[in-house]
Amino acid sequence: MSQTKQKFAIISLGCARNLVDSEVMAGLLRKNDYEMIRETADADIVLVNTCGFIGAAKEESIDTILEVARLKEAGKIKKLVVAGCLSQRYPDELAAELPEVDLFIGTGEVPRVAEILREHEANTGRRRYIGVPSYIYDHDTPRLRSTPSYTAFLKVSEGCDHKCAFCIIPQMRGAHRSRSIESVVKETADLAQSGVKEINLIAQDLTAYGRDRKDGTTLTGLLLRWRRVDHQAVEFGLYVELAAQAAIRFPGRCRGLEHRVLVFGNRLQDREEVFLDVDVAGGALAVAAAFRDDPVDAVLNGAFHNRVAYRNVNRARASGV
Image (cartoon, rainbow, N blue to C red; front, side, top):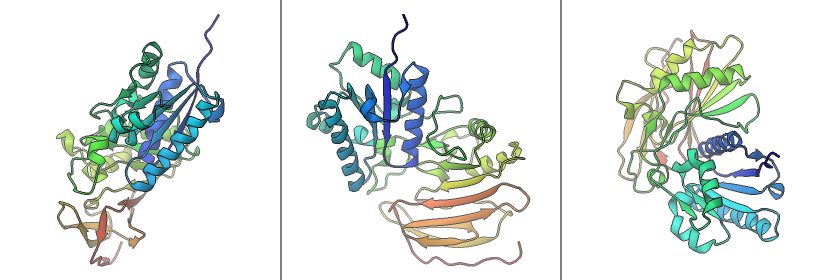
């Protein structure tokens, strides 16, 4: 007689980068004979993938954990797992304050989620699995996308090497590490074949993509490499979240303009060439770039998440494109 599969549900909080982690954990659990369901009250295991960046996000995470804990208290679920940035940032404090949580999993333990669940079944005494984050998924990693069929997030790098006085991301996400261009391109092609029309490139520090690899890999090189992807039936949209740094360069391909960004907290002013429309509104810098001789429309959006103050933004469009 076959063993009944344990049912799990995932509640993903915070940013798109966290959502990708949730999708990867869902794919890995399904591969390991767990069954994913939508309704948390009908699950055996509920995993809350938390955000721990700012106060409001932490409050939302705690409220969600307590809400799921009430389901466990009522006997509707068997196991409550807390993963993500909040677990990585406050493992000891959470374990002390939330005895109703069975497991705390850090951001670097994503690939071990099924292994950890099974280990916990044999040894319920250990509640914390928090290590130094060094993992990043690739194109072969099982993943259950939760976005609409026409759009997908694609994480190209993880972590950040900057030591900004106000930012906790390096502690929660680890040192910066990039996927290879080939891995990103292969996942792009797979997504396009599955019907995705819009691909959202994301990272904690996107403009640093490739720097850690020390083999000449750059974000510019990645985007130019996309020209080889078969996209005859696909109109790609690229929504790129830029970290608090200089904007990306596409020399000779787009109209140029300059802006000055003032970055607080152990960071210097940086002046870079960016392209087309710069719109400073609501704490975000939007950069739109169009490839004239390529059917791929690249839309670069910089979401700086309260990390950057903008000053002296000068729009100076060059003539003739």
